[in-house]
Length: 592
Image (cartoon, rainbow, N blue to C red; front, side):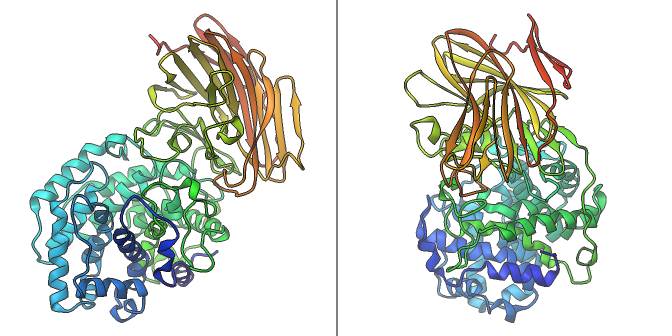
């Protein structure tokens, strides 16, 4: 899919649902009234950048007419702390008040305009969770201020202060008490920060643009040569919202101060959007974006994902605010962007590697402290995340075939068949050549994991396990989509398990004490990219109470390549890797 302004507008409009009957497809943690309001507002991220200067055109869209009716009939949902999910949807109104106030107000009667502005002011009465939500407070109050309507300077100052508390430095933010450094850094903190600087230059002076420019140098590494972003963290159902950072960077002209050319950004966005355009992410009857990632997959949803929620992806369409003659629309897309093959991102806890087919990230820091976040072990705590292989989601609590064993180490009390894996990471050390994390399965079982990148397709894992009881331990490599044991064969040797098909190959090779190699089949709808069955190559063993060290070489690649030779040895104070990899890893003393 080529990115012309017209084509992008047409794609956006094809993803606008035909009517609101689709809202009955599934529920969420908030009320039907809020779900309905959300479905209206999220469409505005596409509609207003495309047609914000054309009030008559705006009125042709169902969601715009629905919003006009809500305002004129006095049916706006109640703004309160109990209903604070509504605040999430007000950021786009702050953007509209800053960018398109004249045409926006033409949609309403004088009475409607007055009541709408008074209603927006009520956001100042809501208790908000610390984190990116304070940008909604900031955008709305700045929008009110710009349009000479009552606003709260106190709340503007509070929002600015809270956002500052989230800033880590070097362009990175951490989202509140959960300390996430995921896509919310890009499509929330920086996206809204750039819009603040763009819409309200006379009302406020910030450092948000400068921070986004710095962050761009890190964020470009989260995309592969095909434009796909690394699937990682919560809210993956927002899909191409990952590109909204680049859209905002273009809109504000901030890209001119990065190392990226407009052709490189266009090439990255074009590949990303083309990839999503090919995937079955729009339901054919109602025409809405489904909940899921590569396809309609409720298993991946969060409790805050309603049928209208995926339209947060529409934030990418702010690029439609650029005029037709802007150099972005005229530029020829670059084939690739300039970046290093390897990079270490300490704030994210990532060692990132690129090749022609994938970008992979070894993860040594992040975990979720939010017990309400569904499948947070899979979304944050796996050892490796690949833009090509994706990851699996657990189906049930009983049995290893129901457990998402890919890119993880799972333990169970022998005979119980209920598995636990790395969840909360208690301590982390990041080095140029590897990352180390310390974690507990439960109080009596502690594990130190060393993740050593070789390249995008190869990495080494070393686990030092201390336990007071015997444990069944299973370790998995990358999931291979469309692998079915009825039709596909595995190559199982004494110390390795390999599976392959038209999708590529996934291999796990044991480097330490003997483990049993086997294939673990995984059911349909478990992988976030493919709804077909898949499989994971694994190593299995039962360890005794005391100290055990396990080591493995993991390979996941689209096309067969010569595998690096690696040997593993342990000394009193270090682990040694030799062969194509020559590295000495000093043992961490986390447990003490």
